[in-house]
Length: 594
Image (cartoon, rainbow, N blue to C red; front, side, top):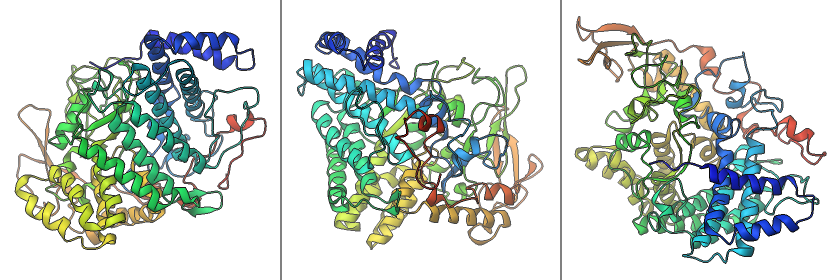
């Protein structure tokens, strides 16, 4: 059963919030409260659970950050990127401004992330002062969890905004207004914190808490540490240009070695693994199976009435039907780029799970059928109401968690770092393991062994890892930060536009993609049987099928992938929203030409 952020946690977080709000007053009362809270495991757990509350706030992760960050890469986009009727598209197509109407509110993601950080800071201070937090103890676990949750908030601040204020102690009168810090300082602190947290929290299923992926465990902590090490050493936009960090502590050698060691420790622990099939992974996710020890390493936990993962990203449902009561036009806000389906190997089992060409049409007497959509508007099949074990009844939220990290990323990070440090032969086993899940065993000699063994240079292996990342993570909004740290963001976006124009013209690598699909319904009278999606399926399959044109990919739609007003490399980060600039007492400013 999914863990809920309970009323108890909210009550405890309210006590801590009173401390946040009264930071200019005498510390006597708050210190007394902390001495009780953080020496008592049950109370301390409620306080640490309160760190998670901002994830579910209306304009925080739930309704703003998760729905908007990470779209418009070389694999996925906002399906209405060409829209000029609101500010949604500009958040995705590298043209957001500080006064963006979706984001420029005082209760937005920036504010909620810092609220979560402040709660974490109070918990960390209290547990260190009063909890005797040692490895193996309940209060030690809670300190490790608090350190990790703070790192999550900071990781997302860094990837969305670049340099941000560093707050690692509860606010006081002297730190009420802080300027932005060099992100290198924050990265180094987070890497240190996660090293400490890894000593405090058990592996998955190592105690009662780590039996669920809604609580942090050692595999996730180490995986997050590896991800942050690669981000810290990677390319990114600084105020003086695109470059790697100049800090010698964040060198490629140091950070790739750290990341490899963390990934290797996770792999060697045997406490997490790939799910046997790719479809099985995503069915398990939509069925809200949060048992630890599988592929999901940690999930942002939402209660049944909060969270918008399916509401935002699922295969679209036109209205309430046999699979949900979530309201009209739910899902389908984003989807794969139109050519991604055709870039997959036809034998790759990830393709049909990831890329869905249909939506669920209008329901008649509560019953809907699949119907073909459009070449320019695909849907993410990883998110499906029809795979859930319950009918969503909220009209605004679905309650499905966000998978924040899964074991597949550990394998790819292991491959990337092993390749950099030791060469392609060291990376090969990790890449092979991921591809073995993607292809039927009968295909392994060619699609796994021969394919990977032919990658004889570091560059060839790196290029293959970049491609594998695409096939594995389309629809999970992990691609943008990866492209940035590889210094491939603009290169791949330009390439994606060129691919879409080739697909439009049925030229280049897409000369053999059919322009007409044919469909009929299976015996259940709801499931489409489609002919013509695969390359070279150009013949009419017979009178049982209905023809459907598959060619509506316009110049304006293609060009909406990123704004022509600026280079994507000049807009790797969102601007700090105007409301936060105005309330910063002049300490916050925007860089990057905003």
